[in-house]
Image 1 (cartoon, rainbow, N blue to C red):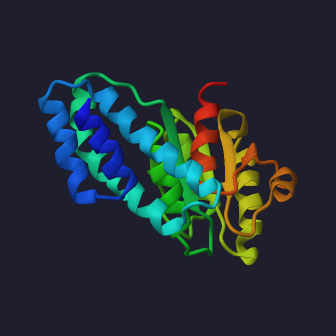
Image 2 (image 1 turned 180 degrees about the vertical axis):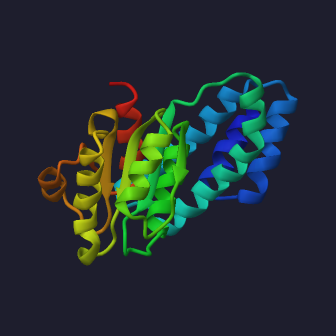
Length: 211
């Protein structure tokens, strides 16, 4: 369908002001909300692949993700009215003493692009806040932890330990990431997954809900 092709293109190019009206046009034409969402997810998948291959960079990822966010804002009421269920529920936050949020925000938007409902706890999030969130939201099955400094990497381990001490570790999968984080470190602290970039994070979280 021409409007969905246009929506894919505008999403990939980060044309935020155009994606919302295109989503509305698609709805007006009677296209099912899930098909509209799938078109934007396809676009973000292409961008994610390009990013992983070094063919595009963070600025391009951000504008594409923001364009999709503008489109999903228009789409959400129609999806809710149609009873469309999200793929799953997750939470994300940058750990205690770390104020970086660009990477976290990008990961959040890419995960939303997979159809996952995700709450963002922001930056400088202490372990106990994650614990309380998990207690209050039993539907949450994935916890995404971000650390952008070597000095805040220990807070990743502290957060996982706090979740374990609260008896909640078996309830959730924990995914970690950030510039200084490695697969080896993720294994050492008991994380379920490590991903090197936002595209990979979105792909991995989708797999969690298929397991």
